[in-house]
Image (tube, rainbow, N blue to C red; front, side, top):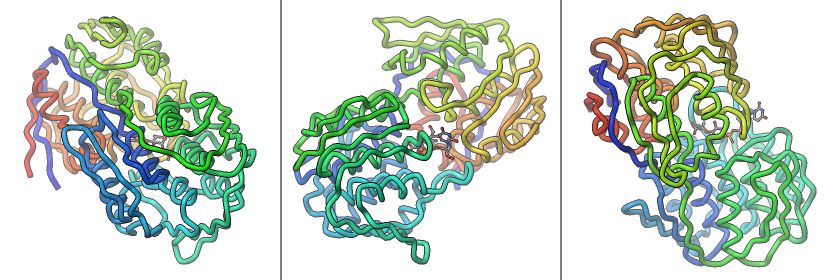
Length: 419
Ligand code: EPU
């Protein structure tokens, strides 16, 4: 396992370009299964989750080429509908191959997917929804067996506004016979972008990006070239890093309205920022005093759970008492222990709620990251801490942030990777 050694205390300045969204690109790769034609994706982030998904598709029989953020996928050679057990265990997002595979194959066998250790995440919402198309689902020795005798469109109410369940149902529905309606659909911008790509392939989808999505099934999808939307979570992470370092950073290639509520909270926290250059740049400027704020994480358009942990660093630097309530994942506050070691004044009320008192100085320490977003959070903490920090298990951060240390170092950070 690699680690980062970080010398704290530098404030960030300069410009950084935001990558394509991990949580859109992964689903678009799965969508390539829906056609025998070529699928070309541009602005694909070069991160390890994307490389793992590339292997998942290749092991199934797809041809996948990836260089310079352009990915070309041809799934016409897919014979097998049993993804590699080890790979799937490694990446939870691989769950989204169920929808497109069952749309095209009679039988799909899928192990329970893995991913970050952020809480119990059963896949019942997915299986119950897919059963509505007339698919039989059974669980035998940790393997889900999906049997399809022709998918028929249905009116499906999801158990919860799950992002990946919405995407799975959407991708199964585009080739189902007749009409499908997904109610209680998740409305994240990544889902709307996936639907836009599918429509370019010949699908008939309306309402994606809202909680009711309507799909008219078609017989076949065709070739597409699609650019992945910017990663709003990466943009938010860099913005918080810039703000807490009292830096001056222009964050380029963003879609501000995907960050509406995040920016609303930034304003409440007194972060000094401006949207510039025709809405494509978030300019974080130096702030003297941060205000305490309260945050609840919610499905989009609420405050994203993936930006919960990075924001905690801002709360440690804000004047007064802040409260953060993680409504989605019960295991997503594990990093608090590490922040406390560094000097943060945080009380854990329960597995979903913390109270943060600030401002408190942070001190460099040996700390461990538990998941992708917690890892990014500890990097930010170490960058503003006094002295040197060592962060373990940096591979978890490589899952979702491309060249994070090079990009932060270019802005003035002092981060060394040690293998
Ligand atoms: N949940 C609720 N209430 C809701 C919606 C969801 O309690 O209204 C709960 C679910 O029960 C579950 C959790 O929240 O425990 C997450 O739900 P969801 O099914 O939406 O998560 P997911 O589809 O498995 C995707 C992203 C996650 C992101 C969540 C929430 C991908 C591959 N993963 O996961 O991304 O945190 O949506 O926005 O798209 C990450 O990138 O680090 C990551 C974990």
